[in-house]
Length: 132
Image 1 (cartoon, rainbow, N blue to C red):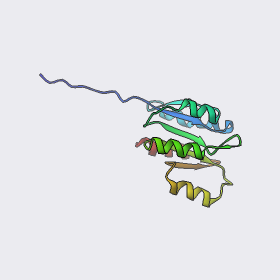
Image 2: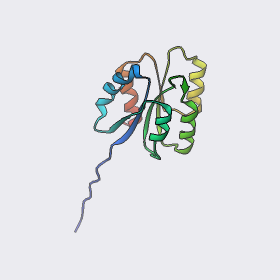
Image 3: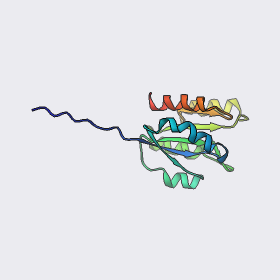
Image 4: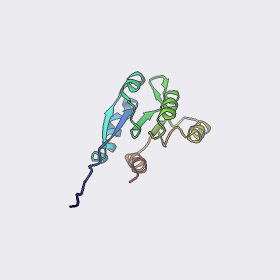
């Protein structure tokens, strides 16, 4: 007797921690991935740290700054603790190219979006992060 076990792939959590001016656009772009992810909005860095759990396959969609506070140090700590976490970082268009290059070389983030970005740029990066 043979048994076939079909395992349903669970949705991955995507923690969305971005400035409010792009929240709606980000959620719109992410709706294309509703079969693969569950979006969990977070509104400040403190809440972000409390909400993010030890999920090695989680996705983080994070602004470089939330209010006046940089998220880079916290993302570095998360990435060291959970190297499998994929991080999509949003930076402003006035971020120095050298700073962006240093962030990329540090391998803290999996991808970077530079403001202003389109829904197409967002979805292209999401497909890469999800391995689709």
